[in-house]
Amino acid sequence: MSYRSDVLEQPQVLRMLIHTYRSHPVWSLLSTYPQSPVLLTGMGASYNALYPAWFYLNQQGKTALHLETSALIHYLPTLLEGSGVIVAVSQSGESIEMQKLVEQIEARRRHNLKTPVLISVTNSAQNTLADYSDVSLPTAAGPEVGIATKTYTSSMLVLNFVAKALAGKLQAQDFENGVAIADLTQTVLAERNAGIAAACNSLTRSTYMAIIGRGPALATAKNAALMLKEGVRIPAEGYSGGQFRHGPREMVAPTIGLIILTSPDATLDLNQRLAADIVDYGGKVVCIGQPTAGNVHISLPKIEDTTFHPLLEILPIQLLVAQLAERREITPGDFRWSSKVVHQE
Image (cartoon, rainbow, N blue to C red; front, side, top):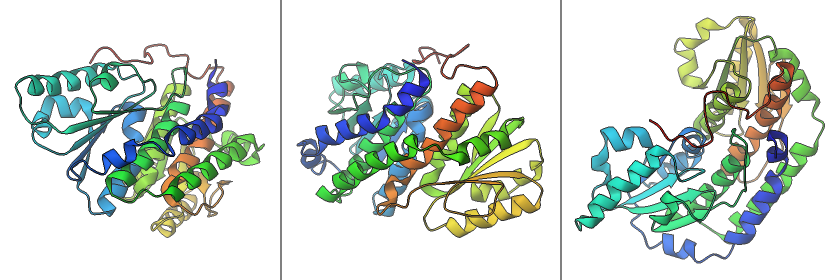
């Protein structure tokens, strides 16, 4: 087991997920649950994977909140009262925050107090979070090194279906689109993309990385930063394009690496314009997605259902992390201070 093998297993994991859930009775069950509010919670990569579902549900008129579990259990436990739905995501289902979330919900249940329906997305079928959930949706991605790759994309795929089911929009075609995404995942990972090597050359001497996106692409921006910190041990931050213009662009310099996600959605032109402006400032820009101004462009296939696009655009980041780590003689996923499962707050 290695970081690279985890990355390359993703197409197979996604196909197996679709095979498991294509005709699963859980989707009919989800349609009977309270549709609003929906509370989406997780930590780390699991939290980042929830961004597209958060945007989608609100776009469909369903009130959805997106909160770190650490904030939920300590500062906003009143959100665990009453009806509604909680979608909790955790690769292990055993992190300290998820254990405390379960404890708080179970304490209310023991006193016959109303609590939201708890839906969990975890890697395995048996863990603390899954055991106490009303609905458990295991991804069965298998063992993984420290950096979340296949557990991240498999969670995002299931969450795509969950969000559409909760909004009453899930159709058979969504699973066909999922198959197409799994196939494209294999294509992107199999290609000897010269853009990855060029991006590595452009960014290898950077002392700080900024990854910029808008809307659902915030999932990629935030998770890319997490992966660069974990795997390359470099300071990195994910920004929304709007927030980057409000001050952070002042740090643009030759030593700052910038990755802009030019997703094919409503703000594509804004992202393209930002990329062009940063080039004018003298910054080094790597663009992932649709063609635009920049020092390096990594193209991605166009897809019909753009709700799946964040699942595709993380793939070049995964490959880039491997190359950048190799240049620094670091083994991706070989943590020094962290662990795969966080047991201490």
